[in-house]
Image (cartoon, rainbow, N blue to C red):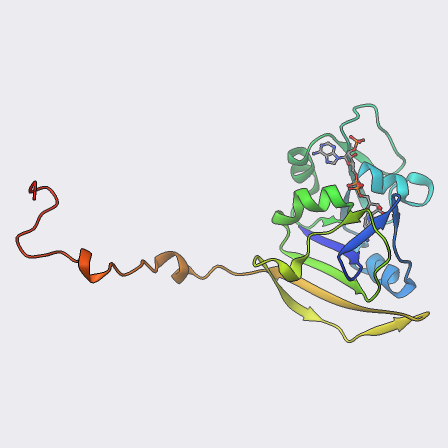
Length: 187
Ligand SMILES: NC(=O)c1ccc[n+]([C@@H]2O[C@H](COP(=O)([O-])OP(=O)(O)OC[C@H]3O[C@@H](n4cnc5c(N)ncnc54)[C@H](OP(=O)(O)O)[C@@H]3O)[C@@H](O)[C@H]2O)c1
């Protein structure tokens, strides 16, 4: 899975169930990256989309605990396990905060649009710059639209080296085996 998100300087992503920013270049990039793919989202994010319906030209899967929930152009699932099974590996997680939080560890790339502004927010994405589990794989130059500066930064999980598992701490000399000593000898 992959995730795609636009964040403010303190990783805010929304306020009052709405986005913090509308940057047309970023929305265009979002459309281009997700077109033809499956997108997965929480019920609140779906309801915040135009007309409260699934995005066109994409297969939309929405997570809700409400078994009676329906929405145009959207399939409904009731738990993350069902969502993962239904969506498949190349799906994009498109929000909101609760769904990012639950599915982030399954993502092998996160497309972040970093916006250099800090409006008040009530929904947040985990701060990947402060996480030892994520590293920057690519970053664009800083761009500007209508006075708003922003940058695309892709994060990938930090690779755990095989050697990290194999390296055993060397025992201190004091605990090195001594001739004639056996731990089973009763001292
Ligand atoms: N900046 C961005 O890129 C971006 C992208 C997307 C969204 N957003 C923002 O994020 C905010 C919304 O985030 P949010 O966290 O409040 O809402 P959300 O994640 O979009 O939706 C939350 C809802 O999803 C359902 N859900 C979540 N986990 C579930 C589970 N384990 N089992 C069953 N259902 C589950 C529940 O629906 P029910 O209550 O129906 O059970 C829950 O209330 C908005 O401000 C939105 O604009 C920002």
